[in-house]
Image 1 (tube, rainbow, N blue to C red):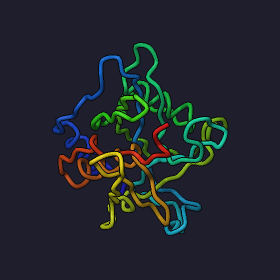
Image 2: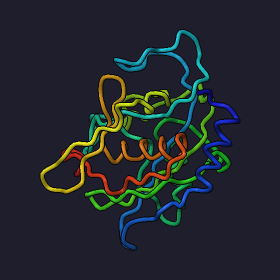
Image 3: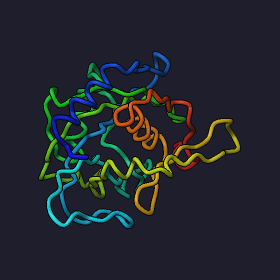
Image 4: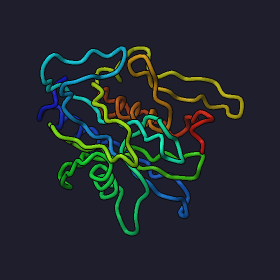
Length: 219
C-alpha cells in the first residue's frame, strides 16, 4: 500500500462520509491526537517488523514512545498530541503538537478528517485527527516528551490477529490492544488505530469508544 494520491483520496472520501461522534461532557478536558500518514522510509523498525532495504514509499503511521521523564504514561506508545489550548480547534491542536513533539510542520490542508472522540478514564475527551504527512524525511524528537519516533507500516495494523480484546474485572467491556511487531499498543491509542484501520482502510463504520483501557493507562 503506497502513500500516494489514490490512498489520500480514498481516506479523505471515507472520512467525509463517516458520521463522526463528538463525545464527552461540555466541561470535559479536551485533547487531540494526530494520526499522521507518512512514508515508511528506512532504518531500524521494531522486533518482528523488517526494515526496508531502501527508502520505501509504502504507507506508514507515525507513532512515538513517550519519554521516561514524563510523569504520566512514561515509555508508552503514543500518537503526537496533547491538550487543546484556548480557542484552538482539534485540528489546530493536532498540527501544533506534531510540530512540538517531532518537528513536523504541516499546513491545515494536510488534515483529512476526524474519527470518533474517546473519553478516557482520567476525564479527557480526545479527538483523533487524520493528517497526511507525506515524506517527512527529517523528524526531530522533543527530548522532554519523546524517547523515539517510529514509522509503523499500515500493513502491520491490518494483521488478522488484531485487535486483541481482553476481559477486565471492573467492566463489561474488554480492553482493546493492537499488536505491533512483537509488542502491543494499548487503548486509547490502540482504539484510534483500530478505528482508522476499519473506517479509512477497510471501509467499515466501526465504533471504539466503548472499549476499555488497561489499568496502567488510567492515570
